[in-house]
Length: 424
Image 1 (cartoon, rainbow, N blue to C red):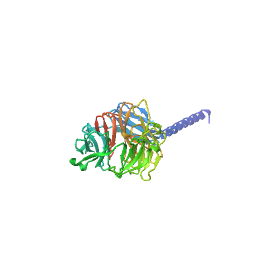
Image 2: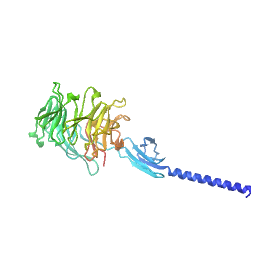
Image 3: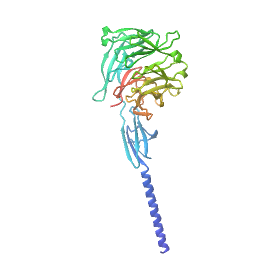
Image 4: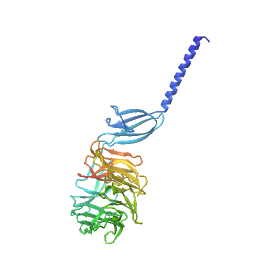
C-alpha cells in the first residue's frame, strides 16, 4: 500500500472515529438529560423550578433542559391562586406542564360584625357572636352546583340580649356554653333554641382557662382564688362537683392554657408565666392524672391536637424584625417524638389541621407584599401545597376554620367573618 493510500485510510479512520465518538457523546447526553416545557397563564406569571426563577416568553412558555430527578414547580401571579407541583423527570423524557392559574375567588361575607368564630357539630356549619356582641348565630356554608360559596340557613340561636361576653366555651353538643365576663364565668342553656326558656347563671369565679371535654364528661379549668392556691380542677357540667386533680403551684405551672385531645384522654397544659423560659408544654392524662413534659427550651405559646389525636401543633416565641408575627410553629407526635420545625411564622389561632392530619391550612403575614396570606401546607414535605393565596383583601385574620369537606376556609378579621373557596 502506497503512502498516499495509507494516508487516506488513516484520515477516514479518524473521521469515522470522531463521528462515532460524537454520536456516542450525543446519545449519552440525550440519555442523561430531560426536556421540560412549562406553559403558564397568565403570561406574566412568576415561575420557579426548585426555587430558581425562570422567565416565561411573551406567549407564556419556557423550555428547560434538566438532569433527571425531582423538581418542585411553583407558578404565581398577583390576583391568582398559586400552583405548586412536584414532578419526577426520567432520562430522555420530554414533559410538558400546562397550568392556567385560577383567579382568587371573591370572599363571601358571612357577617360584617362577627366574632368568636367556632365550628358547629353539624357538617360545614359555624357559630359566631354577632350584632355588636348581643346575639349568637349559626350558619351553614357550602358550595352550590356552580362551585360558588353559599351561606345558608343563617339562624339566631339567642335573643339579642347578650352582653359583656369576652370568650365563649362551647359544649360538644352545642346545647350549653360558658360565657367569660369580667366578674366570672356564666353558663348559658340554649333550651333547644326556645328563646323564652333560655337561662344564664353564674357558673364560677377566679377561673382562668377552661376546656370542655369533647366526650362531654367534664370541664377542666385553672383555679386561682388569690390565696396562693393554683389548681387544675375537673368539674361536672354544673360545676357543683369538683375535684382538684393537680396542684399546679407545686408543679411550677402558672395560669396555663388548657386544650383537650379529641378523645378526651389528654389535656394540654401550656403555662403562661412571665418567666418565659419556663413555659413548656405538658400533657395531663385524665385517667392516670399524671403529667408528662412534651417540650423543652421554654418560650412555648400555644398548642392544639390534630383530629386523630396523634400529633400536636406547637407555637414558640420568636422575634423577627421583618415580620410582626412573634411565633414559629412546629409539629410533634403526642408521645413527644419527631419534633418538626416547619419554618413558618404563624399563630396557632390562624392554623387549622386538615382532616387527615397530614396537612395544615395557614394564614400568616406575607413580608413580600406586607399583607395577610393563606395557603395549604404539607407537613411531610415541609412546603406549601394545594393552594396559595398571597393576599387576603379583608385585612389581618384573627382566627380561621377549615370546612369539614376542606373546600372552604372561614376566617375572622376586624371587618367581619368571611368564607373563601379553596377547593372543588
